Length: 340
Ligand code: TXA
Ligand code: MG
Image (cartoon, rainbow, N blue to C red):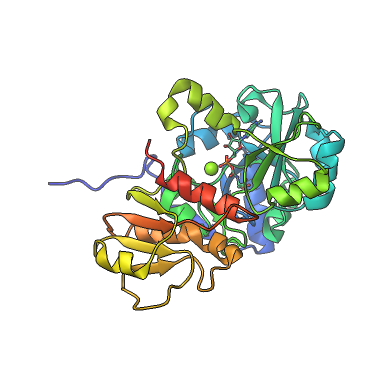
């Protein structure tokens, strides 16, 4: 007789809590005692722990199944708080003044307070001042910097609702704070500003290359996040695969109704905008009018929904060009499609 799979540690699935003052106090208590909490941010949901508590942070890696070579992002309430755990040079300060609180993460030189487990032993730390009001209230109630990677099992699509967090990690964590669907929907932009004259974009996001270049007054190079750089050394094939549904994903420069109608009925066809013509029941779109912010908000939720609907393949139409938010959207779609 087939046995039902039991939760990994025999606990009940995580409770989803609203942001009442009593719940925020209770969740701050969980964090101060070294526990984990699923938290809403404006980008994606995070899995938070006290960033100054090594054993709490070890719990994040365990719950996600994340390799210890992939460092965490530390969230603080203000630029001033960031200065307490890292050295901000003038380029970092300029970006912080322009975009914090918001969906921008800066890689800067760390101070001694940050435990090695958070930075995977690097002498730099990734820091973000989030804008989500509920997450900010939790940060204030906890009074500690909070380390939080995206709250998904390692390698899967990032969560943009509390339900997504419960679906992926619900049996490994006790609590999720519900802050509604994420308003941005893609993970933060990451910029390495350790060398002010050579800033590098490690991950594109809602703060675009153009935004960054305008504030810094110079061109910005491209680099890799520490996690992917280390993976490249360990296993070259794993490099790009991330944010991936289990269903195979096929990328298209352009999709037509004709092509989708002639294609497999078990396949899902995702257009950038609502196409003109006869719409099949296996047709989807990122945004009715092709608005990129709408597309960013919906992409991950749609990938999750299609992934659990039993399609043979998911076809994605790329966003034309690479300007503005298109760079981040095309990056995430390419990662979803990468075989690894
Ligand atoms: O929007 C976001 O950034 C979300 C929310 C929760 O804040 N967090 C998030 O974290 O996306 P995560 O762990 O899924 O992605 C963080 C990335 C990883 O690829 C990691 O390798 C990179 O940041 N990273 C962290 N510290 C780094 C460092 N010191 N140098 C270079 N890359 C770093
Ligand atoms: Mg992640």
